[in-house]
Length: 139
Image (cartoon, rainbow, N blue to C red; front, side):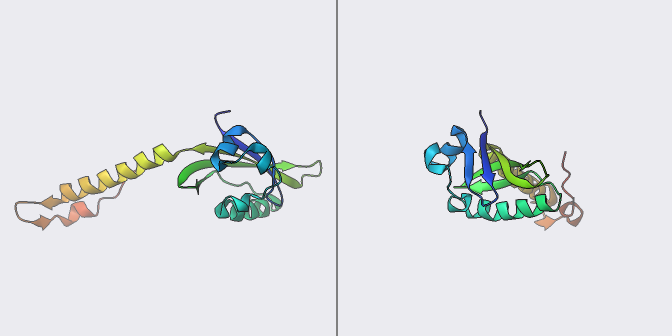
């Protein structure tokens, strides 16, 4: 699979994973089984506590971004429930979006520069207030 996948239990221990997930950690798959996610990523360790609290309340965990070793991943999390509906684990899919995030940040910086240039009169050295307050519109 081109997406990193992992099954974690309620303690945050790796139960099953694919090679793409092992590659993120730089460890062998067999070395990750039984290892707590918090030992690899403090943020992920906090997230698993949050995730199971949401599952126990009958809520879903929204897809979100997470940074691991300087790379940004898009994370989708779904509960694994037993016959009684109790969340006994969670399946996490991670997709590396680092290149997209870098482009997004570069675009934001370019937009800031364009806004400045469009609201600044170099001849009079005056800022045009009406243009400074233009709101960013997401498309």
